[in-house]
Image: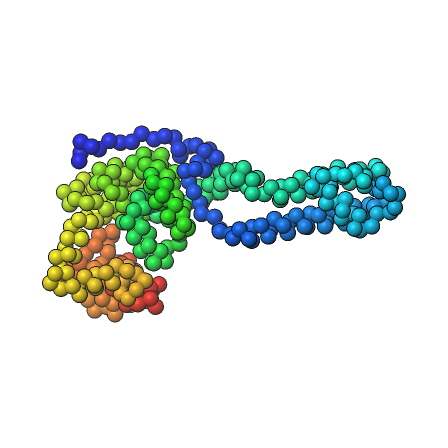
Length: 357
C-alpha cells in the first residue's frame, strides 16, 4: 500500500471566490412546492398591478383617454395592465408633466418588477449562482466545531445516521465525496456537501476541516484513508479523527498518520459473524448498542460530583470505562479504582429519557 501513497496537490479551491465554488459546495435549500412558488409569483404580480392602478387613479387628471372621457378606476386598472405588460395600446396616455414624472419614477420600476415576476423562473436560474455564492460566503464565515465526513458510501451514511440519532444537527455535518450521486443523497438529507478529492488539502480546507471538532474518514480504499488522514491532521492538530479501513495490517499506518481511532471493518464484521454462529443474541445486543435511537446505547458523560471517590462499578449506570486525560481505562484497571473529578464515564444508556443526561 505504501507504494501507492501520494500526496495530492491542492487546486487553490480554498482561496477561490465564492462564485467559483457554487458547483462544488452545495447548501440545502428549504423546499417549496411548485404550486406555492407559482402562487407567490401571481400574488406579487397582482400586488404590483393594484398598486400601479391606485397611483394612476390618484393622478387620473394627468392622463388623456382617446375618447376624451375622464378615467375611471377600471380605466386605471386597464392602463396599468397594458403598461406593466409592455403591450401599450396608446389609447390612454400621460399628458401632464406630473403624470409623466410618476411614470418615470414609479410605474417604470414597477414594470420591471412585474416582468421579473412573470419570468421569475428564468431569472431565478440566472440569479441562482449569485445567491448561492452569498450563502457560501456566510456559511464559510460561521463554520466552526462541526464534523467533516469524508466518503458518503454505506459507512459514511451509517456514521451520519448515528450522529443524527445522537442529536447532532444536520447543519453541523459537512460531507466530502467525489461522487455527485452520493452528494445528492447527502443533500436530500439536509447536509452541506463539498465535491472533491479529500486527499487534497484544499478540498478539506474548503469543508472547514481546519476548524472542525471531529473528522470521520469512511473512504473505500485504505491508501485514500491514509492520505486523507495525513492532510487532515496536518491542518488540524486538535480534531478527533476517526478512520475506517479494510485491512488490520494498515492500522499502525493510520495511527502514525494521526488518527485517534481506527475501525477495521473486515475484522469487526468477521468477529460478529463468528459470534453469531454460537450466540446470535449477542450480535443482537451489539446492534442494539450501536443504534442510539432504539433500546440501549453506549454513551459518554461527565461524572457527577457525588460520584467522585467511588468505584466506577458502583455507579447507578453500567459503566464500561473511564476516560481520563484523553485516555480510556477499562473498569477494573488499577488506574481507575476510584473516580476523579473531571473524568468522563463510558456507560450503557438505558433509554431515551436518559439520553441528555
